[in-house]
Image (cartoon, rainbow, N blue to C red; front, side, top):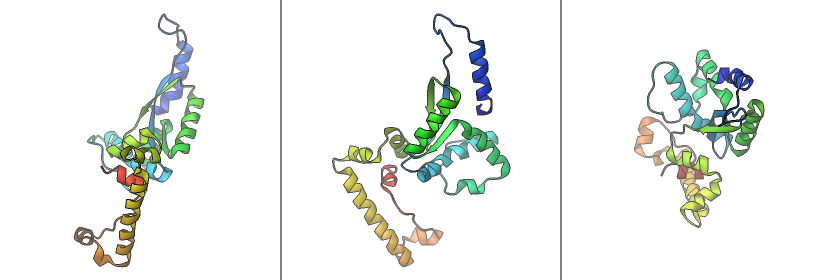
Length: 193
């Protein structure tokens, strides 16, 4: 449990006895990572694991739910406390945020190794999170993948902009449900295949 982690590490190191297999303490810690191209996208993707954790703690486990926009605004005080504790062994953000947070966690704990855990609902986003750079990811699909996907995104967003000016252009199901489409990014395209 994250709340007892530092105490457990101290006890382990203090009571460690060398053996044939291990001559010094070796600390391997689980660490939750949700990485994306931006902090905002990572925060959104992470809401799946946050919902799952809260459901489990409330005795209602189930399948990993899809992410939800503005999820944390719906939480009460108890739920916020549960998530704050969980976040002590986690990082969520873009590449720089993740690098900074992981380095700080290793410095704080003295961990020798991290076992990275990620619960991301969308398979494409999960793959991209581990492969790294978005440009490289897009070019895995086609030698001009980045240019192709960026052009596609511009076209979709141009249509969305038109629907913002004239709601009659929205597909019927959008109008019936009273919802509007959000703007697309290249990451959205590769996470939906």
